[in-house]
Image (tube, rainbow, N blue to C red):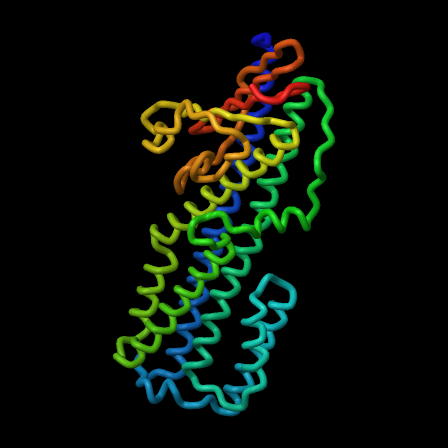
Length: 343
């Protein structure tokens, strides 16, 4: 292939790479804002609760467990109704919606329970939005990679193929299938983190009240859990790893549709390449042996998403076409066969 043509295809895949990178970055940026906003709302509710029921920022556990008075209960129900209305219009766990409906009909609610419910609403809202956004991003990642991989290869060789169409049902099925060793989907991992945070939040709240330490300790602990570098690291890690998997999965499906039989892993051997990726350099696998984490990307958490661009193509008597595509950390050499099986 002439240099001019090769440069054209390289630029095409670089554009796709940049587009997906921007989508990932935008999602992560919005999520960071949501975490900060949630922390501010939690702080505000804790401060208001102490201001209302505590004396000099101190309240005993017995005082916290006192039931709300009739006017306080009425205001609490108004708040719960607002939560229910929000849940009907947005992505909120249905189990939590049921708890809200039950709370709205209760005639006895303690001061402590009212605060716990308010704080949990903020967390449920945060994680509900996180899952909704994550699902949307993963579907877009898979769909874009699937169609563009097939399109660019077909356009390059002027060969027409009939591809399986992707509808919402297919996309939902793809992203709902667990692929990691723990058998959990990304949604389950996010809910797991949510439950850990809620347990921490409720425990710290009760302990702080029992110890008479005031709101500062609760808020400080929540900042460490919700706004820490480790929390942000885990979120980014999940985004990058899952995105890498679904991108590779989309390529696998597109390559199967295009009759690709084998692929070779060629690592970019530089200072940024991990030992695992270096050890995979030069390995050739059949498409039937394609297994994420074993014979295909992602080989480890935080691996760069396989952003591909065509580097070289050549045809031998119309029977063999070799496409070399480059990843940020890996290059995969794919053998597309037409009219003959095997190498």
